[in-house]
Length: 510
Image (tube, rainbow, N blue to C red; front, top):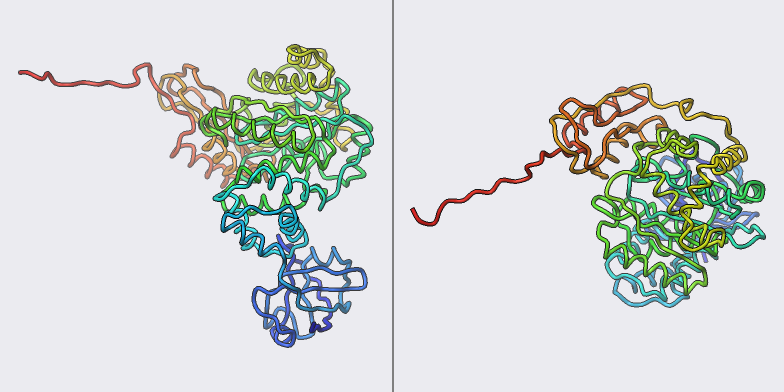
């Protein structure tokens, strides 16, 4: 196969896929056509990449290398590498089969996953896979194969202890900081909980964003292992380690497309849990208007899918369907949620957060044999009341490099604030999850840790005209203005009077 030797020009460029730049004269000499892949080989290894052709960004005889490729191969500026055309990835044909609605074999799914992780597939090809999964779906055999290959193509957190417990919420509800309360409760009872979480993509704060306000969340596998062995738990960002790395790539594409295929959701969650060695898993499925899962029958069907998948993968799993019709607690946004989580651990949190966190922790305590069946929630509440959960959280924060003595009021929030008043008197009929998220993100969350909002009223409350409904916090004046504009144009809190509707009619005979 034809090859050429090029000098590395390391680019200060991060790409969401492996990509190199080649001068058009070198591309012609190589016989490269748009859509082809190239193989870059150095003394330390080789990698397959997509390539972009340029006339001026790199000179003839140079290879422009993004950070991902430079780091993966340990390339140095000016180093010579051998560049050749790479064969078409096997995964492309498998994706085409799925687009046509055909069932894939475990080997074909393995080809797809390996090509995703190696960077051999283009964004368009991965998008085709996601769309095919959304339209065509996958059988349970295919999902099992997807999970196993996603785990095998990444690293694993080997703790050398068992059993290992984990919990995951499918999300979709603002203020869902339950993990910062549930994990310390469970760990304070002696169970091992290596909790890895994502950062927010479309919501106002993911678990990792909230925990990062209190301590570091980015660790190597060795560091994560040391923390868990020391304090029995960790609250870390899963993206800092290569646990089922194909999942991270697929999620980025799903978010761009606005699709969340159920088959990939199942594979995503289970692959991450198996990668940390979990054999006792709890899945939280928030359900209600504005949540990711809105109807109870849909939630039950998803729970059954998770349970069936767990049987095939030989792990113990329970699913909890929780109320998701309005935000959990009152705080939305990283710093505000961190404050509320710490207040809850110190015995002064909102009822909805205490209810959810203790109920989920109770199920895990029963799974672990720490509490008798039916008594888990009471055992979890006792861990909260006694201060054991708060002490465990202090240990986790310290082990992750944070200040264990931090008080909720010491956590800084945005210094730009606006109060939104009730436009009329009446009863709170609805608090919209979607618009609450939209307002908090407009204010700067989650990238601005102090941005977000506090909801001051919930459904069913009576309010008077002019009474405060919520407080919006921001770190920048212009972002506060954007958030206020959304709150006024699309009020997230709907107020109604006792009279809901008036009907009238005319008599049939005059």
